[in-house]
Amino acid sequence: MILFWVTLFLFHQGHTLVPVTTVQLGEPATFTCVLPKEISRSQLYWYKQRVGDTLKLIVSLMKNTNPVYGPEFSASRVEVKVDKNISNLTILRTIQKDEGMYLCGVTEWNKVTWSGNYLSLKVIVIFLFQVLMFLLNSDTLAPVKTVQLGESVTFTCVFPDEFSGAKLFWYKQRVGDTLKLIATLMKHSNPAYGPEFSASRVEVKVDKDISTLTILSTIQEDEGMYHCGVTEWSKIIWSGTYLSLKGNTQRTSNYTVVQWPTVSDSVRPGDLMTLQCSVLSDSENKTCPGDHNVYWFKTGFR
Image (cartoon, rainbow, N blue to C red; front, side, top):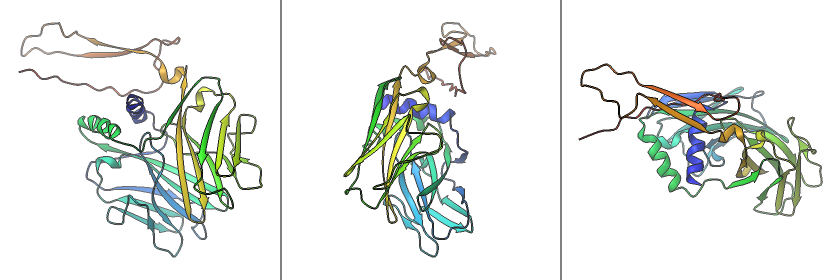
């Protein structure tokens, strides 16, 4: 499981679909959210999401009210501002745990508008080791559900109380992307599906304090995180599950790394040496889909 999340983290670094903000560790970072219109009776939310985790509330805000910070954040670390139809979130001094996705959500009636930005921190290679240590010691990672490509899969969302006047949202999130609405639901009403989904592919049910989302036949594009959000008044409760597909050739293609010259080749001190690294794919098209990050490491000798 830990290896899965570390692999996903590395994949995430090269396949982010939302805008990327890169700053030096310790510097401030500012994210901008353009609202559909000037914030009035709607509510604004800022969330943080680390790789393999669900959404964590940073702050919520309504017009003419003070920001309400989530349990892990405070005004001493983050600053939020709203001016007409623009909101800015500023991390005053970045730390390593700040790297991840920052999502802005604006709710108005039964609609939520999302935008996202990925924060990448310039750090030394040892950061990868620290990410691994974080994952080893973290108990907040979302569960992973693995099924064979083409099979059906069901996600379950448990509410704190019986579903009554609250709104229920199901979202899909591919690696490096923002949230895509699957369906919204209120009690005694039929699900309203997002533009990319329909009842012919996904099925949403609610029974008392449990909701289930079923993908009837999985395809490669279904792999990703599935979020369930329940809103009641000004509060949103989130849960998430990551879907991993067996036989997903887009993610599990085999690669071979070839370095030349080899380690055994002798080099005299002072000689000029050029190193070459090739990434070869075993897939049918003999090419490596997408972009790749290549890391060079030097070993030390006594």
